[in-house]
Length: 459
Image (cartoon, rainbow, N blue to C red; front, side):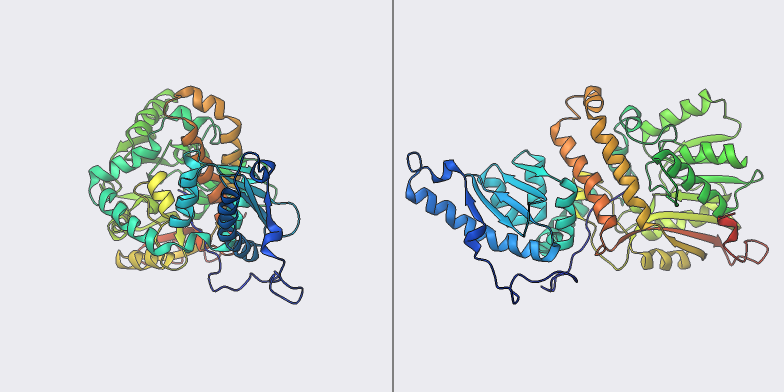
């Protein structure tokens, strides 16, 4: 899971390396940035009152643009519904936001980045130019923080409606995203593993397929997975980890998944590969424990625990594991405690909630788990999302052909924003959202139970 919601500086200070437009060089006149097209200037069709009205709106918009440019360092332009054009920064704009309706303009001023995004989803805003630059500028400028109190209220309402507290609602939340069908995901995930989590991109990695194989192999080395081990893959998705881990290490395993569509496909795939003697999948909530197992693998699960269910889900991970056994938590986590971005919860992952690293470690300690190793792979998520976004756009015609009603233009804009926006979030130097891998043991690990150095990871 990859939520959007990086944070820019909010103290009014331009980012380091940027010069304030109010400095010694003097401030350019706001009106120098206001350009009207021929329609807005044509007195044969527009009255002076109409032009003055448009000019007044531009006067409200221009200072806002100037502030965002100053904070982000990215020049961009805005075209108002009447055709009035406002630009900020020096040089050609990296992107242009075209407001097609007055309602879209009002939504942006009333609800900030969420109003802007939802107007874009509805087709009331067009983006010309570099969409990546638009998201990067929004994150660097702190646009997502300016309306935080109002969005926090809606976030609380969303939690009340869609909480993962009950197993039934948790299942419905998971199916809303992961139940879109294997044919949909196959078109833009890696082939053939279909891993829908952050890849691992050491120097020299060239493709998404290489990155996802490298991620699985990295996890297997961390867990010292071998032919005598029986593992549980919590939140196993399409089974990519299970298939490669068994192929490369000889270990056997069971996947746990609450999404019916993925479970049905994976059962058939295990049978098709004639691997029923080694692998199986169980349709169940993450909190429904069986076992115990020698090793626990959890890739991209804690993000789906829910706002108030983190302790319960981590305790279940501990219960899956034999005393002295090893496990891995691979999850998106915050540095510090923050609400999860409302856009991602409302439009992409209805039950999602990003825990902080500190919260996760505290709950691991309470569950009797020792933290053996922590690695931050934040930088690896941006190229993973870049690859997904590129494939999603390239295969859009094929995606839409699967189900034109479900995969319509609004769906495309929501998912484009999700993939591109999350890539820029993980790339942002101002972000607080990271990707962690934590190796843990049930009880304190012994010198014989785990290597004394990290050399085995890179042999």
